[in-house]
Image (cartoon, rainbow, N blue to C red; front, side, top):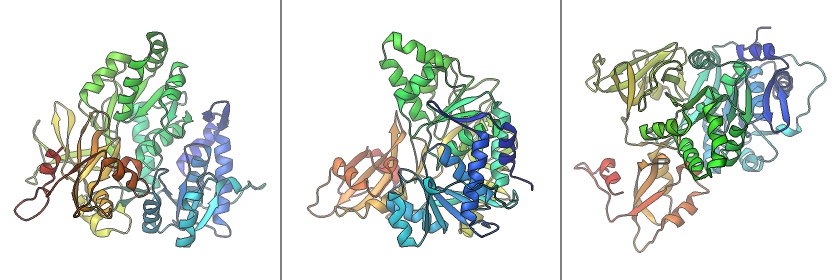
Length: 496
């Protein structure tokens, strides 16, 4: 029986350690055995899940990996759920993806139990699934089949499901393995969200493909990470710019004696990567001055995996995202519809390659509009400067990049308009040293209503993920509009 390459590679790593958390260690063989039995539990009496969607709500670690692999080995499509998602957000993802089952840990089951009852979905508690004694029979899964749906914010009010096949995922992994020289001797912490391509592909999947060791954390805890860095626990480190800002602040606040060992731990790593948002050149220079490490900045998105990267061996230029990765083609298209051929001329980044997704789930018109002559239109503007690409920003004013997340201003506005005090609002991203961009809202209130930022944030906590909640609020009599009556976002941003 031919296996998916990721599974076949895990067999070649056999008894090597795949996961380490304190004294607990898990081997690649344990991942294979447990995922096979979980796959059998999902199949029940079926021969193949035939691309049925299976959502799961699990923290980083052994259960997350084995459930992901189990769904793939049973022929299903994984739909990772955000640990910080609110009930309305989870309901949207489960409904839109038409998920058949939800797999959760016992500790997180309360977040989805009521939803599963209301949507008539089967809820499986991973802790309760016992391993069978016999090796189960599993289907052969072709690489052309759908493998994963990740939800990404766009210029519509609701996130879209990005569908990738096993072949897309394999291409994304192989490109990074080659570009960043992943080895079985590598060790990496995993604290990035696992409903996001950065954590799933760049960290977890590349490490497992290589036979490396992952050390999972439930979330980014600066003191715990710094302690392990001081112990020389890692060879590779990947984070978003916000985390590097927090690390700089934490290191600079330490007494000199405590700081030295932690800085030495960073200095000794072979590779440190920043992505998911623009890395300010000032932060790049600060990190180099503090640790001696030149951060490798790259560019990618949910629909394409990684597309551009500063070189592993070679000059890493602050403020740029480097050159096309192996197997990736890039072109810039000017606003006049011409392919850009000159340095310094801006254009939209368009991408082609085996790693590029094929469709938005159940949105054929949006999918068709997102491609031009086989090239995916990213909506990001860039210029080429002496062989290196520099990102200029989004074409759409309704996309906010905050803390490594790409957020839809329209989605946040739709939620805020449900607030009893808000009659109209405009959500924008404003520059922020820590977050890159902070979510800010200009609001017109109903008659005699009052609203503070604190009360608004409190109201949002049950309705929006933490990273979508506004960090700034300004109350205005009217929103700025153009002659056609449309809110002008650049002018709204000036209110802050």
